[in-house]
Image (cartoon, rainbow, N blue to C red):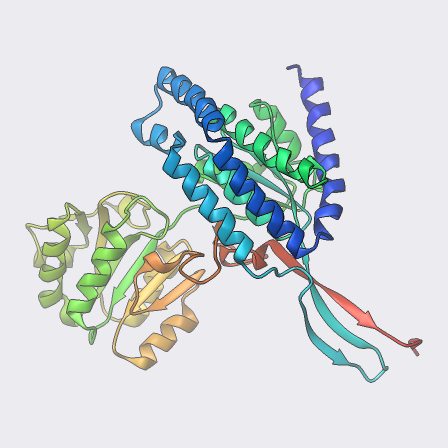
Length: 422
């Protein structure tokens, strides 16, 4: 498709999404839930069609030489469709935040002022590989009253268009414009560049993928971007920590799923317990094939289990069975280290000291700060949000996992009975 045609098609999609956003914003909760339930049923009915379209992407991916990990993320299975169906039903069961009124106050002038929760408007999702993101994102945006434009990776184009077809057919059966949920039907990067300039019509961009994708989107966008560059998460083991509990937490945080953003990447150990604790935790991690890279002190204590870290290792998101280890003088040095090398994702302290735990909670800047718990808990489902659309490591307009409520904002509402300002 030529550049002029791409630009025309993209701008039409944006305008259609803006018009559709007014319709979905006013839609009653029961209707939204009914649509989500019908999409779930439609996915099951159309399973053969979806799997056949996904096989086209899989075949093309193999020819392109995509990695085994990439192909695994790309593939849709019957179980994967079942997970999508379950996700849709879970979103339908969540409380609808739209229209919630709070903080009503009567002012001296006589007016009553409050706040009403409303949708953001139009959301642009840019993501890689996983076709299930198409369903997850559409479900959350729809329930929160937003129109959404979805741009998946070129490697998943057939899968994403198939899922969009199922979604839109359900919307049409409910007499709702299908432009509430749109998937970009072409893979030209020029289309993304055009979308990122539409600040008058698109309210938020959410990129999901590697750091390179997110930085590229942020650099080009004139629209606010939900940023989550990387997850460099740390655990500080205080002098009085329960050491058996600490080993259990560290193993879970590092080993359970090392390739995710809330996995542990850095271990900080108080010097008073380093001689005793480091050999214990290092041995447990080595049994799980974790490669340890440490400071001089940690290497001297565990010279056979910890290798010297290079300067570039500090602050690295390994996303693998590797992590850095550093011996620190205490809480202040640990917090200074986190301030320098952390990514504002998840930080945890293991301690028996209430005072140290409270200082850590108050002074450490991250989207989730924990006491005596694994970093793996930073997740929308684990926090009781239901599904999530991403984790924000910037503070505007959300910080941490973004569920339904984070896909809305609040506007002021005023009730009066003829008052005028004097």
